[in-house]
Length: 288
Ligand code: ATR
Image (cartoon, rainbow, N blue to C red; front, side):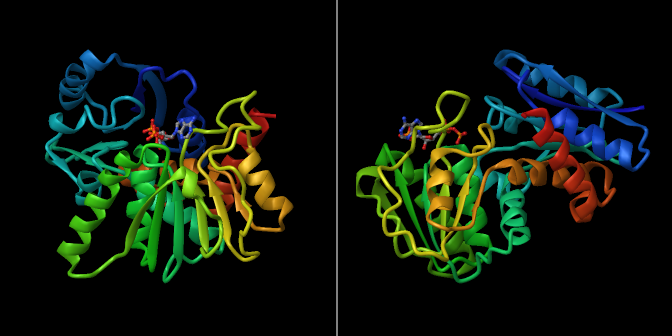
């Protein structure tokens, strides 16, 4: 039996076991996925043990996505740019460990399957934390025309602008990124609007919004919120009330998981729409 893990601190809330164990069961894989609470001081020891045991992959959640990086043999260029690893694989032939960030392709796949084209899109992103960095990188890679980032602390947006200027320079292209304070937020003039802050997260916080209003939102702007619990934040509700297509963060969570599973096992879960629907239904039922 192959064992896989998610490590974090805390890790009790993670639904990754549901996602991966459903995939393993679907493909009759001889594998099982577990949660493991690892304190920050124990991350290095965990990775050393992983290098020497018969496990071949693990996920990384808060607060270890950066901490884990120096202990790996290699890191994908995307994860290096975003400065966060959420998936680690150990190659069966060499025993070498590699880190990836599947939130990046997870967001791109969520947008694509939602029928939202990021190519040529003018995107507004609210937030500048870890999740926002992965989404900003994804938006750039998918060929967006421009990105405007709003954040409470404008200084924190610089990490995103530096990252994107660096990759755009390497790619030899110009990519317009604008930094704005939350107070200057205006929902108009964009094709895609994303909330990547934690405002509205958790039962009892549904009525909190990162911005004052969605006034001016164009009817065809596609709206995303990275939050999936509650399933409908006020941000999403107001967008839907205006008639806009609006998606919560559940699919990004599922897609980062199926992509990670494909990196480890190559079962093809990311392309299996029926299986993804099944996972979505299971998780939705869990929260009802
Ligand atoms: P994650 O890894 O989930 O992205 P994070 O790195 O802690 O979490 O980032 C949280 C994001 O939510 C940040 O953009 C944060 O804004 P600051 O950079 O100003 O801290 C934003 N955020 C959190 N609480 C907020 C609040 N009450 N109002 C506005 N923005 C908030």
